[in-house]
Length: 172
Image (tube, rainbow, N blue to C red):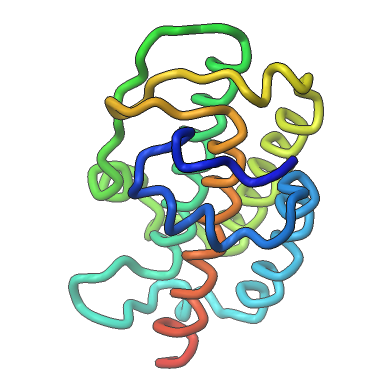
């Protein structure tokens, strides 16, 4: 499945889509958790609460954000793949993180949830027909294809993994 062209997503998402190497986004989605888990699994609960700056999310909050965003994006892909043309609203990531209570949860539980959500995401995309991949809908006021959503999910995780490595783990 080749990467989407720029007509399939809002320009903002290009920064995520370009992070995904190759043209097998399902394989990328399947492989990513191993690499992310390798970074997260060695952290203590205390380290899960670490913020690299006072106004930034903790590691737990960042992981909770990745989980929430993946659920939202996958829901969009499901709706559009099933020919649902209802425009879908945006979501405010900071509000979701504030309401998520991620700081009150154990890091190990968030890691397990990430793996479970990713498995569901992979199953969704793995079972789509070729036509379903190309279907489009409107989310956050912008047209987007199912194919683009898959690349957005993969690229969003890669973006946050890089932030984890460069900002959080480098400062620990």
